[in-house]
Amino acid sequence: MSHSQVVIGVDSSTQSTKAAFTDAATGRLLAVGRAPHRVTGEGGARETDPEVWWDALRDAVGAGLKESGVQPSSVIGIAVAGQQHGLVVLDGAGRPLRPALLWNDTRSAPQAAALTETLGGPDAWTARTGSVPVASMTASKWQWLRENDPAVADATAAIRLPHDFLTERLAGTPATDPGDASGTCWYSTATGEYDAELLALLGLDTDLLPPVAATGAARVGSLTAGAAAELGLPAGIAVAAGTGDNMSAAVGLGFGGAGLLDHPVLSLGTSGTVFAATRTRPASAALAGFAAADGTYLPLACTLNCTLAVDKVAALLRLDREDATPGGEAVLLPYLDGERTPDLPAASGLLTGIRHDTTPQQLLGAAYEGAAVTVLRALDEVMRACGLDPAAPEVAGRP
Image (cartoon, rainbow, N blue to C red; front, top):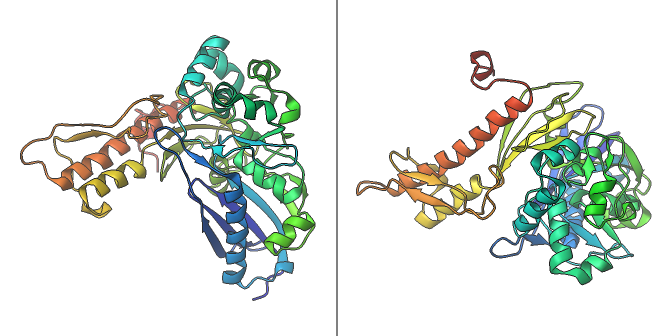
């Protein structure tokens, strides 16, 4: 199959990599190559070797080339959207010093609380970064590493986010974008730069961090000969800065300065995510006040327990997802992995309201209902960040 120009968009998520091959002229999706990841860790730990992401990217691109029939010479560019917040620490040769701490690793909750207090409380953080440190944020994870594995922290020559790590492997040059950088809690959404006071608080030097491109679409380099040989693509094609997965989703939905503003969307997967693009800089302690990929802002609420909680309850009851019925009097608080929104990293699940006639199908329904209520509460907060009243009829009735 012949296509004059093709671009590859890579989604490196928690569980897998997907490489979407798209006709650059028409926007038509030609194929999606996929490859799985491996997440390890017990209790609050969630880790993945960053080399797994690179291997999966290579395999997903290879699968996409095969499925689409696209000639490698037709590919003109590639960019990566990745899971946010993960901490990747590298040696001087760009190799990982340890597995990456993922966004849903909750071990750094004590460090997050201590950082919040040290700077003067939640409002002091939102004034600078738009977000308050919680266990998911990269700054909290870096502080955890400093305290729990100081030898690795001292040996660290570079710090990257997951998508930054892959972009640098592609282009050979360090780069990030405002959207993903805004999830670190050391980048200021007020100034659009790394915050020197926060870096000092964290014992960081800017030399450890990648330069921030103007937008996620900015070209930051060209595919190196080495990366090209591994991926089966032409050397020299454009590599864009890319962005975080939520910022990329906003672009795909047409959110931003050139599209929809102040229009929240729900994303239901392992986590439950609510976000909207807005020109109003968010500063709510209940939200992550991210930058978007295009210069607008992306207030976001993320719950750790969405389909993950439903699937766990279904597995315990040996039911399929579709077997649920309304929960009735049964109520399930679905905080099986702690929770991020609200910020309750040490919480656990709670089941109440069981009667003699409660059925397994109702318990599964209660899991669905608990996850839905948590996400809907987050939706209200995002709407308020956009200057909307969630109780107003004209807002509640919006399509």
